[in-house]
Image (cartoon, rainbow, N blue to C red; front, side, top):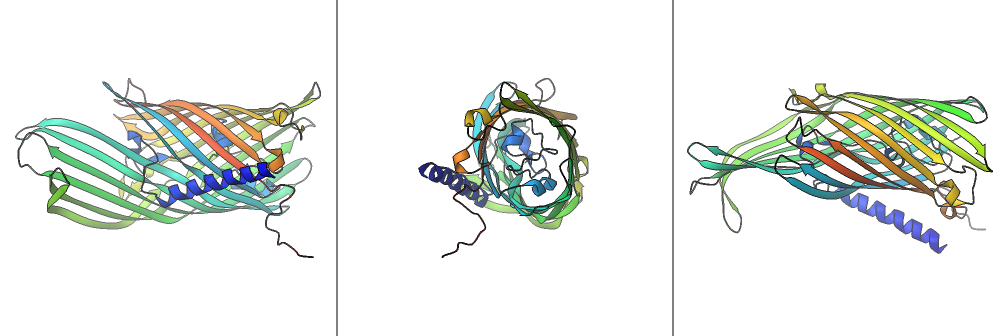
Length: 442
């Protein structure tokens, strides 16, 4: 019981840290200069076990893991599952003559799923959709002013709170066909600032420009999942995901003023302009397709299990606009390949034999355009899932690491090398617990 209490404390701690991060939405959750484009760095809906497999997710259905990326998978959940995850990112920003390092942690997800009936599963939770956090400086010599420094800074992000349902249309010993949907509330704040500071002219005023954006609206996405058993040891699945393109409500507050810097603080001299905007932010549609192949092999008294997953997704960010103005982004597509190996999938009392070993690769043609070139990103990932049998059937600690690069030093003035640690805990009720059941007193 002491061990179970430890697991519960870990999950509560991760949940608290996640909720704290959400409550301070304006704080940075990335250090990347590339997050200055659009609404920031886009976040995958894949959880820790997905990202360890190259972010493959659309056709994966595990009865003890929550797969937000395909809501049809909720129908196959066998027990209530609580999942909380955090990421920790190490970033190296490389420029022509300098290198900067930064690291930061942030909430990945808080989710709960449970079966309502044999053919119906339900899930709800919260995940980030984008993250913004950057600060960089440039300077130039301006006639009549000499050296002028430009300081750019931004922070914030967009979050998504979802309610999802999955339904089994066909469910027999040979095949299952499921459909599902997520109804999401998309919300968040993005704040950008720019400072212009003359260095060589005494008494010259500096300029501060702020652009604050608030987004809030509802969005819907749909999933389809088909699984088939071809033989005793061989099975496969097909998955599809579609998110509706929509126009979210957007509120803007833009203003600028001049100021004088002192040792203590900045003294505002004059307001140049102040403007409030209301309108729409166009969220583009997303299409995702995937398949898996699973082989179960009996060998040396071990029930070995091999899983191969392949995904492709596409989002047309070239149509994204804010207040009627195109954001100048590009079509984003990604291909993911993932692999999972379990030494003995039926060794229910031997944790070492049931460890899930994972690896994967992804290549992303991002939505970013720099110097008229699309920015490419790739990552190689590895991870493991450690079953915690005594804490409940299906309880698993997932940890993975992804290393990769964004940008090309031969194409753009800035490129990044990153390493991200993904940690997730899927918690199911133990034999001593009965979630969602009212206690009875005899």
